[in-house]
Image (tube, rainbow, N blue to C red; front, side, top):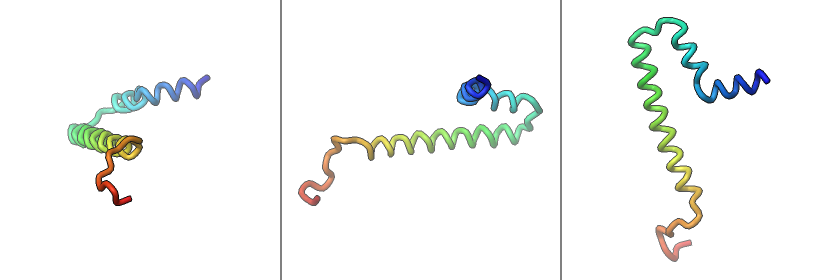
Length: 67
């Protein structure tokens, strides 16, 4: 039961939020963390878009007759 609760709280990032507010976070650490999260979300969005493109079934043949 405890493992399920930990998994749910982990997915909703409540543990991360608790750890951040537990101690004082210096302003440069906040800026660094926020910038990292922005870059990570941009990267993940781009990778998901590329993966979905590769997994598409009915893609138009870029060079007809070459395969």
